[in-house]
Length: 69
Image 1 (cartoon, rainbow, N blue to C red):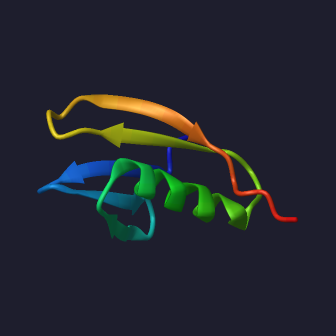
Image 2 (image 1 turned 180 degrees about the vertical axis):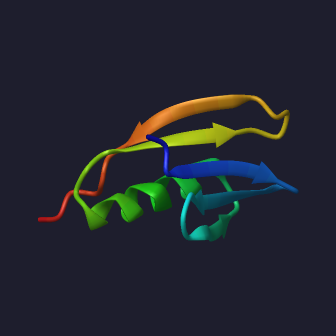
């Protein structure tokens, strides 16, 4: 169900795909989640994303693909 994960690591936020591995490194969680939304454009479906913060706590969110006009 969760193929994307955003992980806080050494002051950066990593976007990781279950099959492709690391997709990018970002300065903020917001930037990493935006990139997850951009990744959702591939199939135009919302993506369930796991989030792990610096303390090791887990959360989840849904990101929608950006609207194409």
